[in-house]
Amino acid sequence: MAAKKSKAELFLELAKPDENGVSRWVDASEFTGKYGELKFGNGASWARKERALAQKYIVELDKSITPGNGIDRIRLNGKNDGDYSQHIRSDIKQAIRQKRCVILGTSSPEVDHKNGRKNESRVMRNEEQKLSDFQPLSKAANDAKRQFCKECKKTGIRYDAKQLGYPISYYAGGPVHSGKEDGCIGCFWYDPLEFRRHLEEKK
Image (cartoon, rainbow, N blue to C red; front, side, top):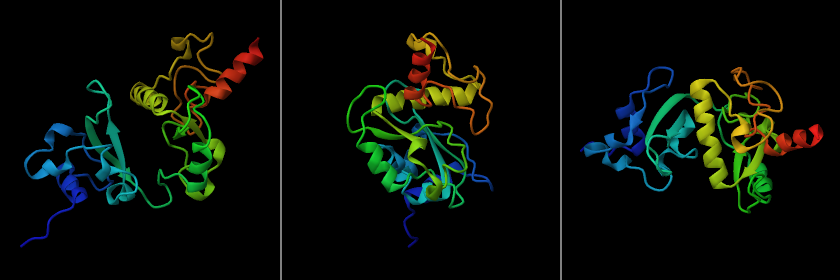
């Protein structure tokens, strides 16, 4: 009898990533029949960063299609080579979680990469991470930022803070994201505290 395949193996069979570790978007509706075990429960546990799949591949989840916070589809967008993981060092997690959300002021925040594109090579290396690379955001704020970052990556246009009633759109740079590692600097979501500090300086 053939050994039962793990959920990671089932997903790889379904998604069929290429030699670079890039797959198509796999819709959650495809998790039926032999792939029924892949149905998303609480936070897609089988695709979490500490799991075997995310240790080998960059896993992207899309929640933007249907209302609510459910995961609509998933894809692989390249291979993790070991040094460039999206993990966050434990001491940084501990320090951030003791703070309050920089937007809502609530406790027990999530640990957010300031750079929503996660394209900074230094920050992706755990040993080179700095506390200042991250910030505390409530789940609600982090979910909102994640959605706006998705839109930015799709369109190349950065979030305009005037939508929140602020008198300026960005404290550095313009509406078009450069695609470079520092391309998020100046956006409200990159660092709300720094954004507000620049507002104070303009008074």
